[in-house]
Amino acid sequence: MRLVLFGPPMAGKGTQASMLAEKLCLLHIAMGDLLREAVAANTSLGRKAKKYMDEGALVPDAIVVGLVEGKLKTSNSEAGFILDGFPRTVGQAEQLEQFTEIDLVLSIDVPFDRLVGRSTGRRSCRKCGAVYHIDFKPPRKPDICDRCKGPLYRRDDDKESVVRERLRAYEAQTQPVINYYDLRGKLRFVDGDKSIDEVGRRLLEAIYDKWPEAEARVAKAEAAMKAGVEQKPPKKEAIPGIKTRRQQGRGRRGFPRDRKKKAGGQPQKKPRHRPKKKK
Ligand code: AMP
Image (cartoon, rainbow, N blue to C red; front, side, top):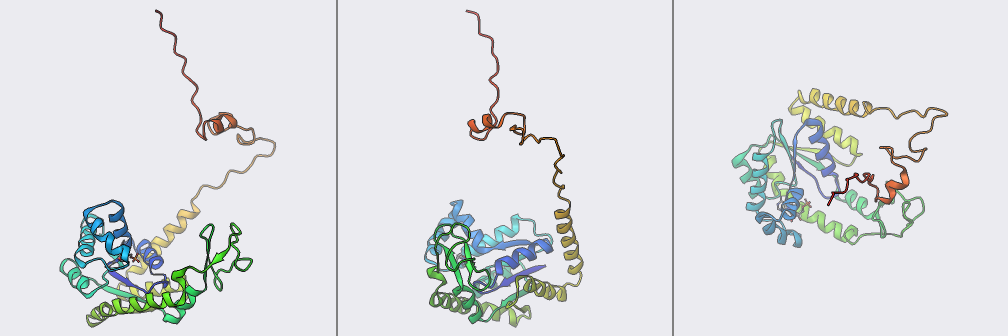
């Protein structure tokens, strides 16, 4: 199962790619993350990529294709993979074909006006960075952060003109790649103007159309996820009349709590008694 996922900024592409990867046991390759990792690790590719990323420009095809090829060779992608943020140019799509085939390309489709609406309603806290949305997640008091009572503001890159520019750039960049896959009969559009869960459901339906057997795999993964949550050990019930260690002021290993605090949160070991050497 070799997938590519497209989606404009704010369409929730990253969230959906992670969900699909988890439910279908696919390797998730997020190009932006891969590049940031290479930059952080200060590899020679990372150093080359950094200057383009700092300018917000596309990193040359040779670098990004090399990174994806390396990742596919060195990671477990037995069940398949999902590419997120790659390919972004026809050149990248052509080079990708040299070392692997793509089975299905999903494009999350959201009218740009809706995305502009999503971003212009976004508010961020100046003090703690918490994010709100005036329609979908409003703060309790207008323009005041629920968490730290800091003032809310609209980030520069959330302003309508900037968002429209980002969307225009996405369209100009991605349309040729979308056409490339459309001509090869691999493209499916999925309506992204819905809730996160609903978009996820529709993406999975598009996948089941191609691989009906994937439905059973997802059902198994969902059951395992659910069981994982349910199998958490239940919290210990308090026994009436019996004080817990915490209530007795003792830490987990039996050291008094104030002694733990003095040692900066770490239980202090008792000094070992060493007999003095005889002179
Ligand atoms: P993202 O996290 O997807 O917004 O990507 C962050 C930055 O990484 C972009 O602004 C580009 O500089 C670079 N980048 C990500 N994906 C690609 C790609 N497929 N081709 C070239 N550059 C990319």
